[in-house]
Length: 332
Image 1 (tube, one colour):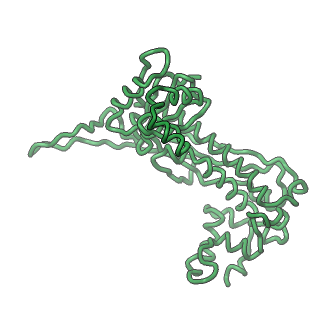
Image 2 (cartoon, rainbow, N blue to C red):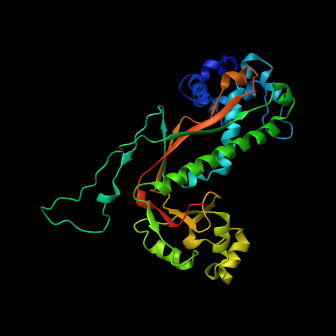
Image 3 (tube, helix red, strand yellow):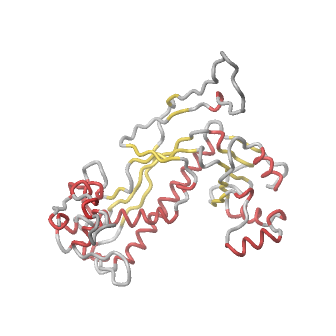
């Protein structure tokens, strides 16, 4: 089949597409429908071509990638996929964003809907009257992009005999780190966005009444997500309102702590004990990413793992500022 004869080289990483996308153009997966290779993407077919097993008890060692010049070109994509798996395992960012925009330039200007000119109060328009305006313009500032990642500091000799299953686990931890960095970047954007609501506390500590007040005034949005630190979460689940018998049964049965109004809770130590960020994940924020996981493919192909970087470049832009809120004070 065609996948057995593809020449693999560094140039496949410089097409402006991902390595797998470049391979798919050469060797489309649709050509394999009804065959034993159906369900594999172009990269996975190359792993099968060179008999490289990347997972399981009988996974190969790192050195298997470097048995030939062609198979060595598969190694950076393996690294990217392993790091991506760690990002997906953490996955907090994807649970608080409304949409993701892929860009191909550092200069990206999102749209602004101007919270001060939006009125979602239900009303009708009489005959002859103009419909209310809904103004959409470009933001006056570019979306700020940041790079997050790690640098590999290991010689090829140190890892070449390690099983790929183990090496994948190590790389996934880098993905978890990147995901956490992106999450911190996202919540800073939510908290500082123009139009973000602020709710003060009725006392020196957060109470159920504070939640009820914020929830009641959060319309027309739904308070889907809450972000707080671990100590604050401990106080919340200790409140009498969350310690009744029905709540306790659900918590013991599922392992999920009862949360205010069913909102999903995320924790971070970057927020103070007496502060919470609330948002409607469907409207609050846009994620902007410049490509996916980026590796120094030339170094990895040439076995120069020392000082090889793995990173992502992302930014976040508020969509509707009032779809986010700060309850109390989040300053640590």
